Structure formats: structure tokens, C-alpha cells
Length: 202
Length: 202
Image (cartoon, rainbow over all chains, first blue to last red; front, side):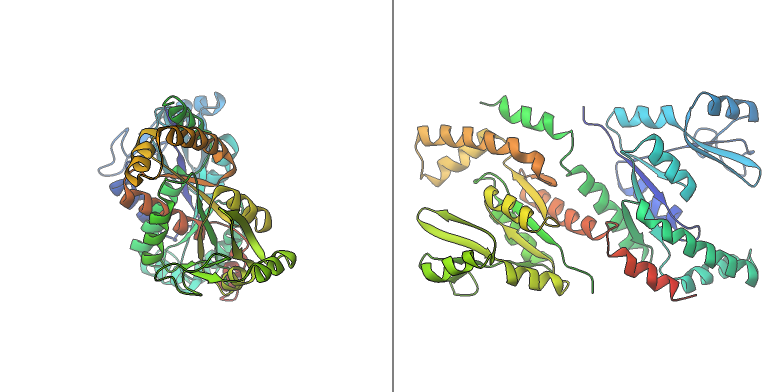
């Protein structure tokens, strides 16, 4: 059975990786990894669909057992990607997509080097600024700090496999879909089975 | 200026790489490399469009000057890919596609390691057999020899970057198009210019 592939969408926040990820899941045969978190469910969020909502103790137990592909603490709450679930799907031949912060992306690549890292870029710092203002959660100084932080993050692009500029959503989605398709056309260990198929014919 | 990319379609003869190549050239912004040959023009063939038709002396002069990306003698005639023409187009940012025999593909990779090798496979040896019978140029023994030769060639797939099974033409073309698009999304030396663009904004 051909091994599924793990695609990691990451990049500076505000670049729109979440929107791209949703579109990919809607259009491709690809599973979305569900994270584990210690924070409480909000609104319509469902256990096992939006997140796995667990206690601090259970989360810590998972860390101790090496059960995460990556995890992080954000604003006092812990978030992590359950390793067993993802690897289980991959071994069944299913592709998985993961949308996470950059620190998490590097953790994934460490634990699972076959993972394919895709860097999602905002079209420009000016556009990022516009998006942040539209959100209305940050003041002028915050925005400048965020722009500088984004520049620092963009400098880490060299550790990624691909990049996609989220200028026009449809084009960005199309690029990610091409990356998924091309990755499945790569000559890798899967071709040995292919060669055997031809050999068995003669 | 972003460097163009060189895509090399190759693989066992009878796999249909020529048909795929034509479709790609028709649909993508990509140049088709025109070969130099010592054979005489046939039918509608035009100098500079189908081939560059040259004398034995001129061809040999090109070899001596290291002027070919690859060259080979087939049934007494010489064929070669002019290096200067291809590299000139690439440096202008233009993608180039090249459809050549496997030996030629390896020569290209040697001279220009950035070239992207795509292996075109027949859907099966049985299908290859059908195509050869349909051509009507080979007898039963020839066909068996060709099938064995194809198997030997398929074993060389590991030296390629991608593979495409030419089962259904439309799908095969779509895969090659995805490969072209994905290659342009790869993090390579081109991203340095991209990073500078963001830096200049702040």
C-alpha cells in the first residue's frame, strides 16, 4: 500500500493559511489533522471534529509519552498534533494536511522528515497591515511589531520545501493542489512497487 | 530576473512522451527546444522549426565546441540539443521542455543538473505491445525484445525526478502541468529576491 503524504501549511499569521487549508480539504481527498487542546470548547466546536478537548493532565501524559508530532502553549492553553492519529492515516495511504504555526512546522519536520512544508506568504507587508487593521484587534504599534516579526519569519523560508503567495485565493489554492499532485508523481520509494508491476507482466 | 526551468520528458519509446509534450507546449507558456540534425528534411519539416538541418561538418564542429546539451546518433543520423539556445531562453526566464531518449536525458542532467527529469511510462507492457502492433513496423520477436528493453529502461527510473504513467492522456498532461507549477513553487535560490521584496517595504 502506498504511504500517504503529510502536507504542512505554515507561515506568518495573517497570511491566510487557514482559508487555503479549508479550500484544500473541501476539494481534495485529504484528511485534516485534528489537534488536541486544553482550552474549553467555544460555540459550535465539537470534540473530535474541531479539537480533541482534554485536561491538562491528559495533555501532559501525551507529551511524556512522545505522543505529539508538535505541540505548543499559546496564551496559556496547550495545543498539539496527535502523532498516532496522523501516522495511522498516512500508513493507510491517506494524505493529511496540517495547518500550524511555524515553530510547530519545524517540530513536525524533525519528528517526520518526509513531511512536506509549504510556506504561505502574505502578498505584501502592506496587505498584511490592511488585514490586521480590518481585524481591529491591534493598534499601530502592535502592527509595526507584527510586520517586523513577519519579516523575521519570512527569513526562515529556506527551511521549507515550497512557498505560496496568498495574493489571489483561487491561485494560491491551485498552487497547493499542484504541489500535492506533483509530490505524488515524485520518484521515491513507492516506485519499487511500480517496477515490480511491470516485471510481473513478462 | 527569475531563471526559467528546463523540463525533460523522457522514457521508453512507445510510452507516448511526444504526444504529452505537444499538449504541454500548446497549453503552457513553455518553449520547445528545437534539435539540430544531420538528416534531410522530410515533408513539411521547416528549418528552425522542426529541426535545424545542418551538415555533418557543422554538427561535428558543435560537438567539438561542447555546444550540445546532449547528442546521439540514431540510424546513421546525428541529433543534438543546442546548448546555447536552451540556456539563453532559460536565462531570459523562459521555461523549456525537451522530449528526448533516455540516454539524452542523462546527458542533459550531467551538463545541466538543474534540469527536471520526468519519466513517461506506458500503462503496461501489454498496452505497449498493442501500440507496437498498431504501428505495424515490428514482428513478434521484435516486440518481445522491445518489451524486455522497456523493462530494463524502467529500472532506470530512480535517476529521474518525477514519473507519469501515460494511461489516460488528459490525466498525464495534467500531472506534467502540476509538476511544472509545483517546481515554480519550490523554495530555491529564487526566494532570495522574494525576501528582499518584503524587506524593502519596511
